[in-house]
Amino acid sequence: MTSTSIQASVCALALIAASPALANDATEGKRGDVNVFLKGGLGDYTGDLGDLTDTGPAWGLTLNVQPTTFLGFEVGYEGSRNGLDDIRLLGDGPAIVRQGGSALVKLSPPLFTGVRPFVGAGFGLTYVDVRGTGIGGLYDSDTQEELPVAAGLEFNSGALTAGLRATWRLLLDDDFARGAMNGEDVKGGLLDGSVTLGARF
Image 1 (cartoon, rainbow, N blue to C red):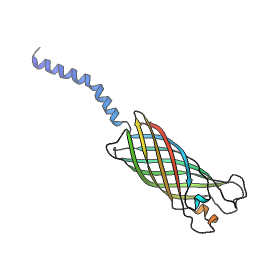
Image 2 (cartoon, rainbow, N blue to C red; image 1 turned 135 degrees about the vertical axis):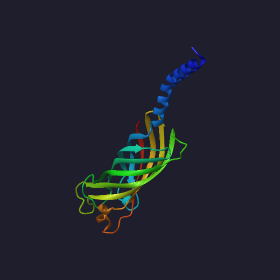
Image 3 (cartoon, rainbow, N blue to C red; image 1 turned 180 degrees about the horizontal axis):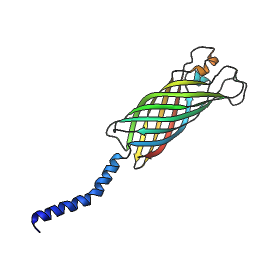
Image 4 (cartoon, rainbow, N blue to C red; image 1 turned 90 degrees about the horizontal axis):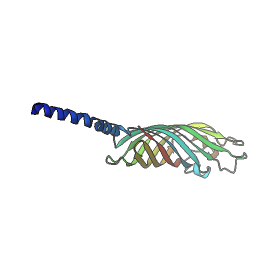
């Protein structure tokens, strides 16, 4: 066997031996492009609405797409429930139950992946369901538009992702409580803090 044949054989063996490692590297490089996670926490309204509501649970299911280390996109379902603390209400246990969806654009420092801080902003559309008896025209179920702004930390390891985040939503339409404010414009937002847990693909 000539030296050229030996060199060719060695190169071929090296490539065959290296191929599983290269495949693993490619897989690891792709992991995290898509994240799916659940989130749960507490939230309350702010401003005028904060004087009329109690802190309550918030929840959601989110799909995150991360095309680069510094840019991400989220879409998801979210909900919350806040009791009404209004002395004018005669019924027991009136509450605002909010369900809808939102989309978010996220920015992160490009060098962080295992622990990734982020900020984000987007748009949301939710249905506010006013539940309870004795509402008396003070509150009405309605659809509202929101502008969410979020900040938080994500912890990524292998196939798992977890995180902490805070989200404040500017309510573009808060007519559901206009009756409670004697027909005047209602000023307020919605603030929540949540924990996230999910999988990376």
